Image (cartoon, rainbow, N blue to C red; front, side, top):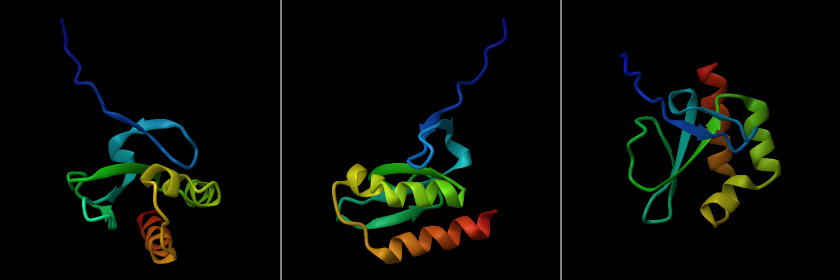
Length: 90
């Protein structure tokens, strides 16, 4: 019998599709209430995921999904940082 390792899936806040965790960009709300981009996937705090796709990011922004997920207002500089990261990773 061959055992296959289970691939962790996470839901994108833009398209709402479940995808492998490694294919998504992780955004974290730290205990101090700061919103940061998590390149390692291991930063402590509440995590949310989004595809490396501009349409998904714009959908998440338009529908205020990050604000709802983290229960706080998200500053425009965070959105700009996400936009530049997504454009650079394509």
